[in-house]
Image (cartoon, rainbow, N blue to C red; front, side, top):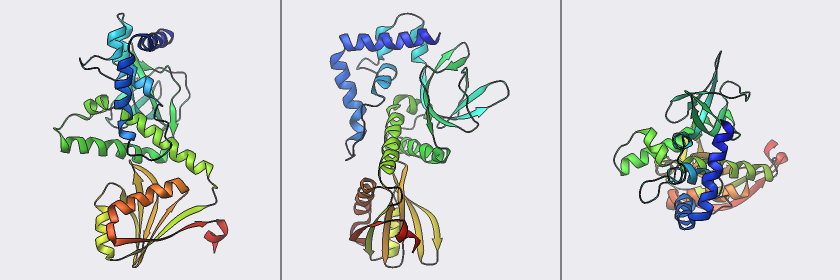
Length: 294
């Protein structure tokens, strides 16, 4: 059965490459649209083929699977689910709990999982269970809240701007967001691995109107309080729901700290956008291990 699913996916992809060139261009424009605001080296093609085969709908509301397949594999592909799942290892089976919809899926797999593993993968329904034909993408367990919040923020924004809809429908109709999230996580992880792990990159700002500044920052989805001590407040700074650094705000100064030069620039862009004239840039610093231990 796994071979049949793989063959069906390959058939759809082959037919697309032969007959649907204009549709590919249209779909890719839609897929890459959320990346237009990112000035960084993201692999925006990552995941496109999978999304295009399973989830993209043409102007008639048809998926590419519907247009190409005519056998029972059509329903299997059409009812597949791509999401981020939390693994629950039970006595006789493995369950994937969807991180956004909280729906449980019993998985038929020989893969060895640990309880609370966090994975991103597409699952296919077969005889009351679900199977995988691709290797899952594993995330650090500490990213669970960040990943959930990133998608839920998009969901809440959509419902506020448009009419309310169920989270299951939103995820299905906007499944490219999960691929984008994977790409962004990879970007930040690679950035932090490529830079010297013993360096911290800091941007210093002079501030005026501390309380007004904090109100401006905390009234966005990009800054959240993690600690307060006397006249110091520490915030996490988020980009598309992913933590990229920390911000220390004192009575007269703001310091942005990250582990990458590129990410520092992204953080500075967010501060400049939301702090306005309440934060005036002073200088950038690179702090090594010796500096941090002083």
